[in-house]
Amino acid sequence: MKRAVKTSARKPRTSKRSRVEALDPGAPPPSILPATGPAGAIGIQIGAKHRVAVAIATVFGTGLVPYAQGTLASVWGVLAAFWFRDSSVALGIFILVTSAACVWSGTLAEERYAVDDPHPVVMDEVAGMALTLLFHDCSAFNLILGFFLFRLFDVWKPYPIRALQRLHGGWGILLDDLLAGVYASAVLYGLDYLI
Image (cartoon, rainbow, N blue to C red):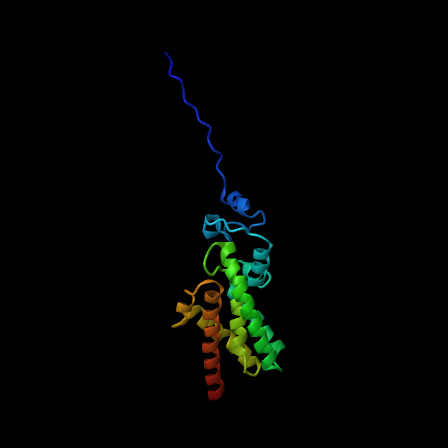
């Protein structure tokens, strides 16, 4: 007797991209948004609120460029400081608004990207860079040196800047950059005094 050959229907393999699209049809490619993670695990509904939050958190696409997202976002902070150069109060309000926007949008962006402190989120750099230049004259020297000092501390992250990244949600995204801005501002004050 011939033995019956047991056949089974093979399940079609799905790509990472199709799994992401099942979660959100408008999702970016897997290099930007992982197909697995908390968002998929706990079934978070990704909707219009998350899309608006990502637009704000990425500074309307600045954080989606392939390289130097934080550096490019810091340029927006320099431009804001220059725009409000005649009023430290106006710049202070700008910092408060961008900080609040970062906490809200950053928290939702973490759900959207299913990782902590996603690379595309760069609103924190805008707030931190603007804070660096608060109360400083917007001379070319201060703008350029302040920019490089902020990027130095933001990348280097001396204590306790790195520890602040462990805070939950948007606060962890924001506060390390604000402290980097405080450090950069203090060094800039010292150099202004010496020079």
